[in-house]
Length: 55
Image (cartoon, rainbow, N blue to C red; front, side, top):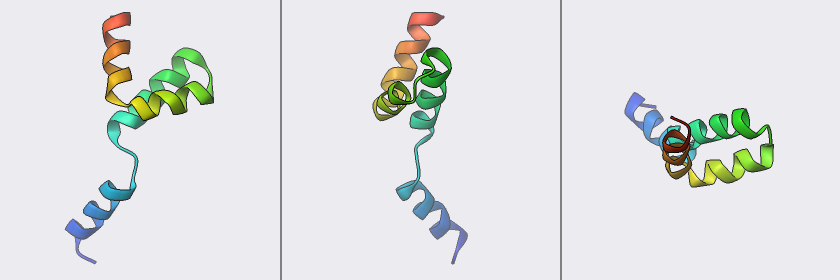
C-alpha cells in the first residue's frame, strides 16, 4: 500500500487533532470521561472556548 493511501485511510477513519486536543483538555479540566467525549464531539469549538475563557 502506498504511503499516501495509508495517510488518506488514517485521516478518513481516525480521530482529528482538534477532537483529540479537546478530549485531553476537557479530561484535564473536568476529570470526567463523559464531558471529554462531549467536548471531543465539539472539537475545535471547545478548544477555542477553553483558550478564550482561561487565558
